[in-house]
Length: 169
Image (cartoon, rainbow, N blue to C red; front, side, top):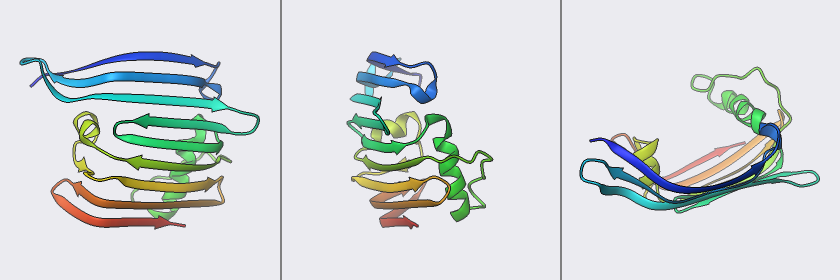
């Protein structure tokens, strides 16, 4: 069936490029509806994203019904994904391709996933995490990556995993 996404947003961002953007995005009452019957399939959910830059660090906070996360450190939004891919390529070379960008991003992060119902309907169709999962880590430029994850229950496609842990050092 056809679906529609309904939400209210309040955006207050400033900056001249991706790497110096600071401010807040608030999304409230996000609901996924079936357009034919006007039935709410998922929601309502709320999401708040706040990013700031102090004298040395960038701070990013994400809070919602389904995920809470933060990243604090010396990093750029434009190079962060490439930094992570370069590190993960060392651990999973057949799955993750190496990026040619060498960045000096340094940060600590934490991601707590509480409920994937909304995410599953929108983007993660094959993944269900029915209980809180915690992912924490540090990235030290090109030198070091530490990720620790604990996922009590994970459904991926038709597979079910219990007490999954991941440690990358």
